[in-house]
Every structure is written in structure tokens, then in C-alpha cells.
Length: 107
Image (tube, rainbow, N blue to C red; front, top):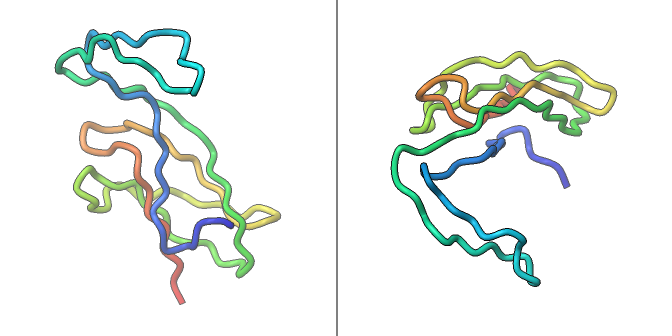
């Protein structure tokens, strides 16, 4: 099951407080023990991936990188693929644009 082209896609990288200490290795059941939660400022990792979605209509959606408050910030260029649509998702590109992308398919 893929995303509907009216959904929001998230691309999450690493986010933690300065000085965070995590115990390694993970526990047997896969959980992580945080020894020190750290303090502000938050450290965010930049990243870039290609998001590909299966989509049969052949129309390309509008893709928007969103601000923290959900408002549209930057149009992202989608491209057609053999199975649908793809776009480059970049996390933490501006101080107010983090990791959320809105996909809108017009009628």
C-alpha cells in the first residue's frame, strides 16, 4: 500500500539534544537506553533521499517542502518514473523547513 497523492510524506534524519548519551548496543528487545537526555540546542542532521511512489494516473503531483507550522515553503520538482513519480527529498534545508513534504494531485 503506497501513499495517496493527497498525503504528507516525512523524511526523518537524526535529531537529538547536545550531549545526548545513548547506551550501545541496543537491548535484546530492540529498545535503546538513554543515559543522558542532553540539553538544548538541538542537533539536526541534514540528508537527501529520492522518494518514489507508485502512481497509475500518469499525472505529476505538486510537491511542497513544508515549514514547521505546516505552511508551504518551497516547491519541489517531481519527475515521472516507470511506476509513478519521484522527487528528491532534502531534510533541514532552511531554518524553518525541516522534513515534511505535501503531495497534491489536481483533478
